[in-house]
Length: 319
Image (cartoon, rainbow, N blue to C red; front, side):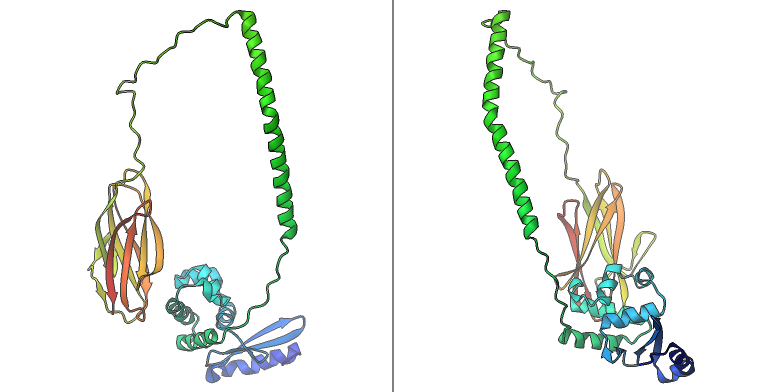
């Protein structure tokens, strides 16, 4: 370890001209007067003072070394910030199936200039030998629970006492009203009942329908959309690289602005769900998903209405 900042800086200057030849990247950091050397070699293994780092630490270290923000990386790779943060934190439980994780790692590693195969290999070794999680300090909820019980007891007691005194108050009010009516002489007089005339048909307003009568006129899967129309719809795709696939739909019958959902399924499991707005009685809309060549097999897109009722679906195959 280089503990002297001057010697570490001189080491960096001597090492910089030959880093392309050796394939070794060096990031120098200065913290409280001490130098720290973090190395990254050809095999995509990252060490901090001799300890091998995780896949998430490797990707985060390289991204920060290139001075790329997490938002810019998400915009460039078309992956959400949530997914990138979960990858860099090694939070694999927050991500979809392992097949999707490998696709995300391949895309992210290529974006950062790393070897996707080496990153995926290290990911598989990491999940085979998981890192033990730190013990989480448990919070003592007993005082909070006791406080809530005390408040509920006090409110119940107040409600019980108020209900107990209510009949006495009502009896006193009834007695007072009888005495007042006797003094005025109105007690004993009969008042003819007033019957309202029946409502005419014009006065009866029908209930408004809450269900929007919408339907799907057209649905197709294609590789591109031009002038709001699908280009060469098909149901079988031969992919050799990550390719965007479009699901086009034409919706009819919407009487007011509403929404529909496109649910993408891969082998029966949800791969993506997206909400699309519908703004007129005839509306063309579509969703897009990037599919990798290793995700071969049966795919399906289900179209759901405003109340999540199934309108239609379409299937296609990746070979």
